[in-house]
Picture 1 (cartoon, one colour):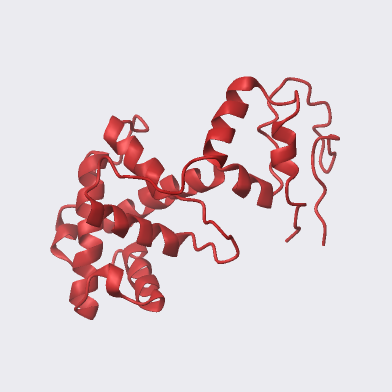
Picture 2 (spheres, helix red, strand yellow):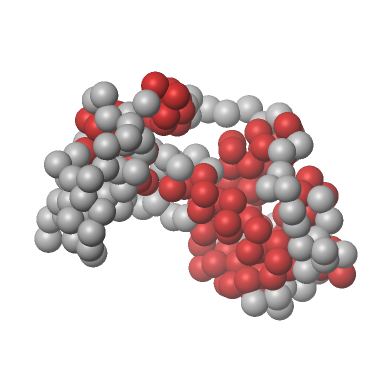
Length: 198
């Protein structure tokens, strides 16, 4: 996998190739405070969401991991949604309440401890059971666990790759949204695009 030079996206943000609105949104993500007080979840449930997100998106090489739980908490507080959901799924707030509770039920059933007290291998095994719709727990009778996992994974993925540092690691420069892209053929790079190094 190619590696892109550190700082390329951050440097691009300072150019006139990025519109002010996009620059403001991405800079807000870059400078978001490390400490976040949950507004929708209670403190324990928020810590559980942080732990689940950290196992789905481990970031061992990042000095300060990209925080994924704040975006979920803020969205649920506002009541925002995608405008659709599977007919087998409850509204998002209820889905997260049942789903995160179900993760703790599965941890208790399988390891006799809450998820936060499990080691990483145990946490990973529970998340794998959840993804396969095989996790134990009574909440799963009210919520299809594979759909919950799919929805949570999609939201965490969106939050991760909406961050400039994640965009930088994959060489994404699509946030340079000022009109003017000329090279649109296969393997044609604009001067603003970083080239991967081996």
